[in-house]
Length: 133
Image 1 (cartoon, helix red, strand yellow):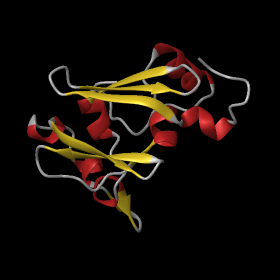
Image 2 (cartoon, helix red, strand yellow):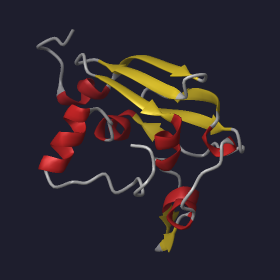
Image 3 (cartoon, helix red, strand yellow):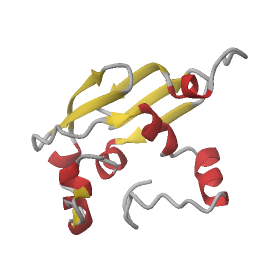
Image 4 (tube, one colour):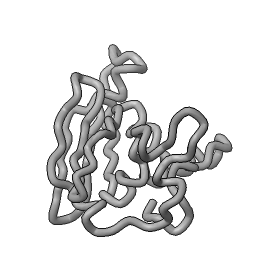
């Protein structure tokens, strides 16, 4: 349950993270009581690494590849990165994306968070149309 002493940055601290490979989902329970559940396809589309997102003005791989294979969305492992992120390894060997808790919370796919982003005029542009939301 959320406590009154939680600071804003503490709200993006997960209290429990569970990757269910069979279901293809990552579930995060946050310090403020909110729960986010991401399917692996969505997570792969959210990969923040330079290869996927681009760098130095160049588009990333995800900008030019409109579909993902089963291997590219099969979670092999997920490791913590300090106290601020998780780093998945995907079936195709990709492992350079560190998903910060702040970013994961900002991209929460629950109806409440999706509506809040839409209402604020901030569409979830990181995920192409037709991809799982």
